Length: 135
Image (cartoon, rainbow, N blue to C red; front, top):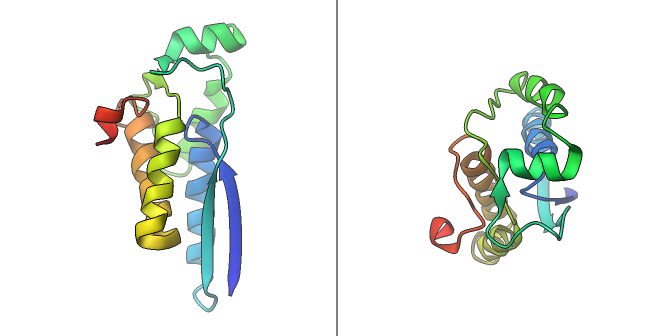
């Protein structure tokens, strides 16, 4: 039995790429029982409560979004398009939902919730800072 503990933030696009790559790596180990436990980490505690517009956030933090070019290219290699990334979310409520999924369905529930929320943020253009969106 292998246990992997991962600390990541829904607001971290590199964590989105990392989760996809970890999932692919785990699929190759058919002989081993692997459990991934997801733990919350908030990269930027100064993110507005309801999240921030993608470009406004990137401009405030880094002067623009040029840094995302290499990220997007890396993500495409793993089937991630970042096609509707519109919001830089405040991930607090999303982390709460992942925790709830873990209490009800264990680590597998956490992983499924994490996948869903990442897809909502980066592919579907949803703002997971909003509790109504999460519901």
